[in-house]
Length: 558
Image (cartoon, rainbow, N blue to C red; front, side):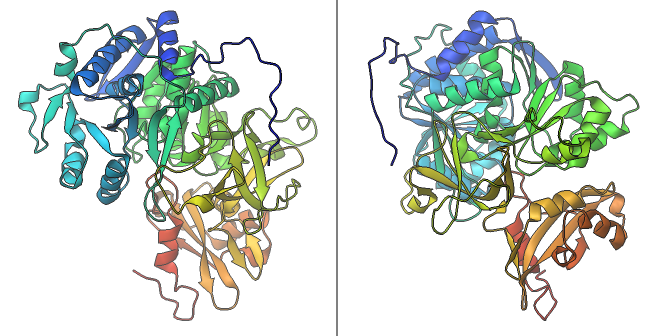
């Protein structure tokens, strides 16, 4: 139990609230003409912070006229768009809570999320009307839908009812809105976990949470008004990792790409080059195709001022080196989760005590780690069964447990989830180590660690090693049930042009980091690796498909 004391009262304005309205108001006052670039219908458009703020005020007036009151939840079904950006501030600015509706989860889960949050209205992009129409019959609290389109309402065909039109509604509203001072403990937004085990769970971020996280992220990546953010992370997931708020707080230029496909990331690269992008966030599943596209360009872009934060899974060293050598861009490994807003560790600048003590190759290898825990967050590694803290020696593995001002302390209306918390800490489910220099390294999910003959094998390290091969696009490693050894590793690889790589070449890569007994029993070639709604490898699905591979029958489930 933490000992709490209270000393001499301060003279500070401790009742001045930290909220997102003060954040955007500051940006508009200081950087009214800073550009916001957005892509719509495959065309590039531009407007300014001041123009965006005017539209936010009009939307806030419309929401109140619609009957939206503080505490209401308002859903948004949209891509990384201009209107989504406006709703990031307009909805919470009234005291309502923005419900982030994940486009990658099933219709059943999306219906559940909408009902569980008791959403009152849903904003929906015209291209996503089929998604809204699919869940509409099952919604119990939604009173109407606001369609977002450049077409007039008369030209939009939908079964949704009642419907309103974003542009037509704000056209008649006043540009003056009496922004209330939002209590900082009010929920700014709600984001639900992807629900890979059980129903999605609601994480409700407070305004204070968002404000403090934004300040932290801005400081750690060195963001300022000369920067340009490309919004790659979906705005419906963990408020795009907080980067939209970082850009707004610091008055940076913002580039909103609209809808894009992971299968073709060339439009993202083109925007980076055209708009002189200096920071962005994404997963290796996005950055790797971007790198492959850059390799095809006759003239390689100069991205030497760019910092790209990579999350979701560990970035391959080959990818980090590729970006640095071809473009000058830094790939920075960062770590977090929906429950952590998300930033809790970042591997940006190497510990100065190590700079002259390790080789260049060792520095690159070190950058694979999740990095140093950020200031303001209390992190410890615990035995998942006993809760006892394990040593920070770089070898002892424990569950990553976290607490701090932007870590969730509970799930919204979710009885039965108490075991996700212990002694005031949120239990991440990640197995990791912390070395003597303070670097966090995630070795696996607790449930994904491969246990073979009583020893642990890190699937993440093995995946990274396999992706170090120049002909490998993606690799995943899972533990498959084995009659003698409990589990044995299985690797799935996706190669360039379906090329077959000699087994000796894979073994040569793996021998650097693994003992012979730890190597996968089989390496299978596949055309695609299943992924979850947030772009991570869906290891649960892979294990289910191949669970009989090592158990006598030798057959997999088709």
